[in-house]
Length: 257
Image (cartoon, rainbow, N blue to C red; front, side):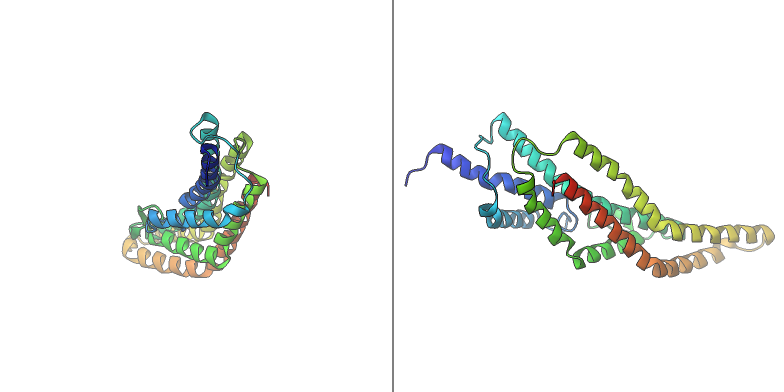
């Protein structure tokens, strides 16, 4: 059996170019991008998925991966994969932002632990929202739908020098404002309720200056905050579903699905 150098390079490109897009998504998407997930596990998962779907994908362009055109194609695959993961990551960032706002409002800003997503300290309320959002994401098979959309993108957005346009990048930047808007909408009922309670304590302090507001206000604010978190949890899950729906619609728009 004789193989020419061009045939070997074409087969290598047919495997490595799809692998780059798939690996870039796993690097940025929530759950798979956790620091607790070893890089070796992500690499094995990426290689196994590429090996399974490679026969079903359109043929890769016959270009030298070390040439200028080949480098441009590689950059496009990285950008496509990172864009998919980044959009879903923004949804979980909205949950984290809402949890931090609630924790600071109810006086639990000092109660923090290491966030497994980014390896930094985060309030416990933020961790509660993030972990609940992750469970909802998995229960709705969001990760499977994301992988399916990625694999379908090889047909709608084939491997080549033409990938995401400048308008697509501006669409991602414009949609990122929903991260802050979604976080504010998630935390607004609790923030407003706790603000009214603090205003009430301020009025009571003015009426009775001898009242030790710190010894009375902190337990009341803490217990009321925990009760409000329990009562508003269904609304949080509903807002999360809306944010995920908007994220998947944006991904479909970017991938021409």
